[in-house]
Amino acid sequence: MAKYLIEVPHEAEKAACLRAIQTFLETGSHFLANADWGCMDGDHRAWLTMEAENREDVTYALPPSVRPDARIVRLEKFTMADVEEMASQHQG
Image (tube, rainbow, N blue to C red):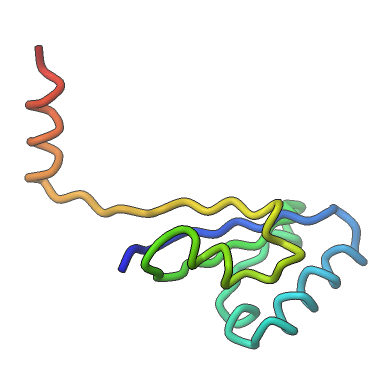
């Protein structure tokens, strides 16, 4: 399975923060428990990670109301061998 970073923005109003939190809570307490929020620092987004087979599975796991604005990024870890291979491919 791949690991994905999910970023869900919302408006910079207290009511919007509460709606976003409520949406996550209604989807399942695991969404709320695993989300990190930037609201208290003026960055009105939530971030969470999820393991899934593909981006489509991540999309459908999200509440429908946040899907259009959600940003989903597949995360990778690189080993030294990966870095060496990439460097050798780009030398010319």
